Length: 372
Image (cartoon, rainbow, N blue to C red; front, side):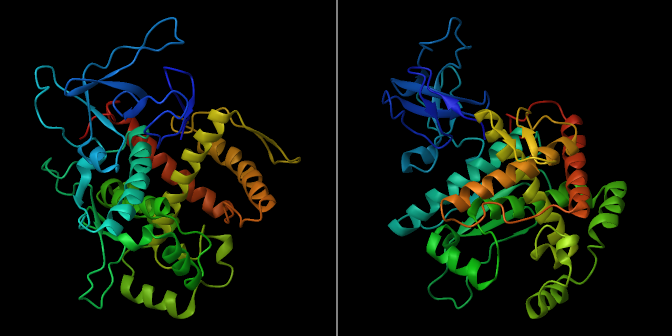
């Protein structure tokens, strides 16, 4: 994620900011222009404030509205307001248009957890926009649109909500937004890493396997050569994984223990790590980070990872950066921020994901700021 700047005072802004802590301006993110804007109300709409430090002003985006979920402090994205429609109701932004189900918001505890989920979702959608990946909307007529269901456990049911993907619907269990509960699950399941954003990136990997691999014979054959045959019995593989765990030596071929369970999970875990990589590298580039740990662990992070056509460049930069991140975390008494390694087999899988993503991106018009 890149950093943003308040055009009124020059203050550095984070993606989640809703108010500039320096000048007090109201902030909103306009995904169509990839801009964080300081805005002021103009009757029923909002307008971007002038850039006080610029010799030339960016194009005026015109009248804007906040996403309808802004009213619940669950979204800071904006959308253009068509001229002459100032009296109309606010709609949903490019991210929230994909919501299919949200929890019962009459329960305050649900609202607090849902707001956390929405923040992670927006980071995911930012990456999908930057990578120009298809994002068919639920009302688009696409046979498998991308949608999200955020569900709380039913007190009257013994079966908890399970995070997962099925037929384009990504379900996130509301309890995963509870930090203590999520950490307890991570520890019980022996996982090195478990975050809300990680769930989104993993589950959307399943979605893009359906969209980008399943119906492309050449991609499917190449995918099976690297990840294995996804026609293997999934239920049996799941049972075997939780009974016996990952096989000995898995670290030489898989990015995580869970990736060993089934070829679909290997793909989804690799996809998630690819999104971890490009988003974190963009942040490192925005900060101008340089890592010099000797030998082959030197990197000047100055690339735009979302535009890089060369997977090897991304990986060669990522490995020393993770060493730096883990070392900094240990200095603060924390566990490794990135508790994974990338052996040659995993790097080959990451290159495959990278190539699939960029073949798709190059094959589409650069209109990722518009829903398709």
